[in-house]
Amino acid sequence: MEQVSLKLTKIWFDFRQAVDKAGMHMDRLDHVHKTIKQLNTDLDDDDENIVEFTKKDHMAVMVGQQPSGDVTFLPPKNCKNKGNYFKRLISDRENAVLKSKKKF
Image 1 (cartoon, rainbow, N blue to C red):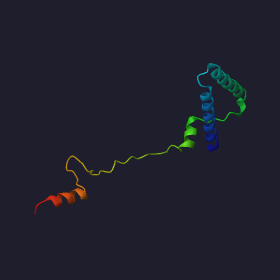
Image 2 (tube, rainbow, N blue to C red; image 1 turned 90 degrees about the horizontal axis):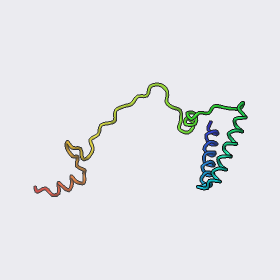
Image 3 (tube, rainbow, N blue to C red; image 1 turned 45 degrees about the horizontal axis):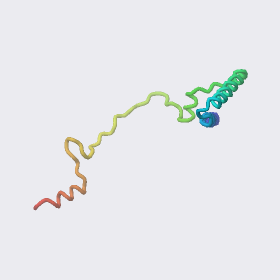
Image 4 (cartoon, helix red, strand yellow; image 1 turned 90 degrees about the vertical axis):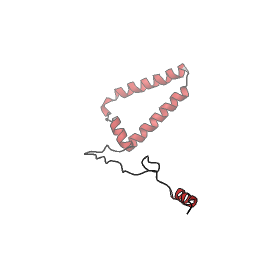
């Protein structure tokens, strides 16, 4: 599956490169289109060697299998950030500056 996925990626890259080379020229785009249609008919004639390779299989190779069974989501950890609207936490540096400004 991994080799098939790599081959498909290379094919898509080559196809995109051919379309980019054709650019906005209608005759070149027609040539690319005719070539693809001919390739498609050639592949339709060879129906006996078809192996199913779905998009789901392709994604499983690239990303990994979808997890099976129950997936549990935990709530996020609560933390008190600096700048919280209840009471602002003061950093050590700011605390030292405030202490030095205090008159004893």
